[in-house]
Length: 528
Image (cartoon, rainbow, N blue to C red; front, side, top):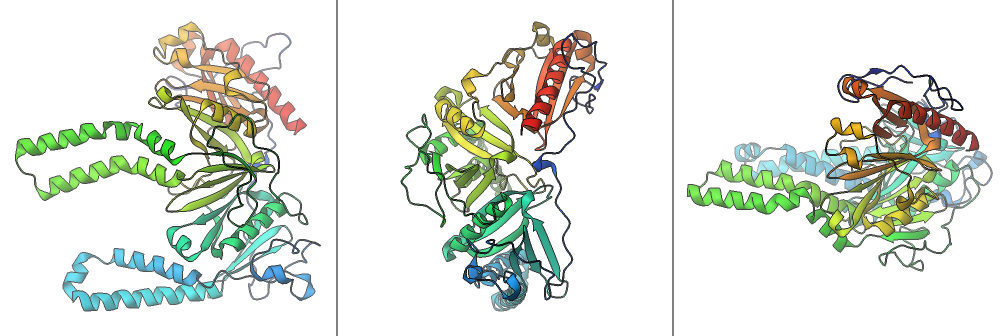
C-alpha cells in the first residue's frame, strides 16, 4: 500500500509515483508488509449460543483440570470428565449492591431531598438499594464459568440467557484488578483482553485473590498451548544494570503466585517528583498568584466565580494526581515470556502482557524531565480494547519514570539486543528545515538489526521502536510542499495502531527505506 490518508505530510497527500528501483534493491512498487496477520491481528470468535442449564461441553483434555483451577475445580471434575461450572465469590452481590447504592444516591438530586424530607428520602434510597442488591444476588446465582478445552465459557442471565465462549489462543492479556471495595473485602476482579475486542471481555467480578491468581495462571497456561503444565516464575538472576530501586529476587511472592524475575521498582518519591515536573504543576503557582491578585483587586468574589476558579484548578491537577494514584508502587517483573506489571494505590492492578503481543516500544523524554535525565517507556500491545472510556485500563505502562540505564535495561528485556544508546539514527536532508525549521535537527530514522527506530519531537523528545516482525504495512506519503522539495514520509503501521513515521526523508531514500522495511518484515515473519 503506497498511498496515505489525507492529512499526512504537509497539505493534502496523494499517492507517490515510485522512481525506478535502484540496482540490487527490491522493487519499491509494493510497499505493503505481508498480508498474513500476526496473532495480534485476528478477530475474536462470536459468542456461542448455548443454554446454560444444559451446555454442550466437550471433555476437557487430560491434565487440563489437574492444576490451578479456581474454586471447587481444584477438587476434581464432574461426572463424564467435564469440569464443573464455578460461581463467583459469595460476597460479589454485596459489592455490586454497594456500587449500585452509590449510583442511586448520586442520581437522586438535592431537590428531591428538599421536597420529600430526609425520612422519605432515606426510605427511597433503602428501597432502591434493596432492589439493586436483589438483582445482584439473582445475577450472581445465574453467573458461572469454566474452562472447556481451549475456551473459557461464561454463563449469564436469567430471562435472557447468554453464553460467551472466549478462545484462549486469542488471549492478549489478563489483569487482576482490585478496586477499593475489593481491597477491603479481600477480593479481586479478573479482566481479559482478546484479539479484536471492542472492550474488556468477561470481567469476573469478584473472586478471592488466590482464586483469581490461580485462574489467571491457568488461562495463560492453556493459551500458551501447554494445558498440562504449570507455569512458574523464572529463576534467573536479576538483570545487570538496573538501579538500586530494583526489588530483591528473594522477596516473597505476591497475589498468590510466583513473583517471577524482578526487573525494576519505581520509587514513589521519583513518581511524585516526576509529576511535579509537568506543565500543569509547574504553572499552578502562576495560576494561584493570578487568582489571589484578582481577588485582592476586586475586593470580593461571588460564589460562582470562586466555584469556577476552584473547578478549573482541580481540572489542572487531575491528570498528575491520577497518574500518581495509578502508578503508585509500580513494579515490573518478567515471568518466562511474559511481563508482569503491578501498580495502583486506590485501585491496584496486576497485568500480564505476553511479549509476543508487543507491537512497539515508545520512549519519551519530557522537557522538564531532561534536566534529571529521566525518561518514560510505554508499550503498544496488539488487540487491546480500544473502546474504553479512557486509557487507564490499557497495559501500556512499561516504566513511568526512570533514568537511561534503567530504560536501556528494560528495553533490552522486551526487545533483546536493542540498546537505546546504539541506534543507527540518521537525520533528514538539510532542505527539510524549510518545512520544520525548529524540529528538523532532532528528527532521525534508522534500521537496527531487529527494529525500525524513529526519533521526533522538539520539546518532548520521542523514540519509537518497531520490530520488523510486527510490521503490518508500509506507506510512502508525500504532501504538496514535500513534492516541491522532493521529500516524503515513510509510515510503518502495526496491529496496535500507532506504529511509527520517518518524516521528511529524501524521496529516493524514502522508497529505498520502504522497500527494505518490506523485505525485512517478510524475512522476520518467515523466521518467526
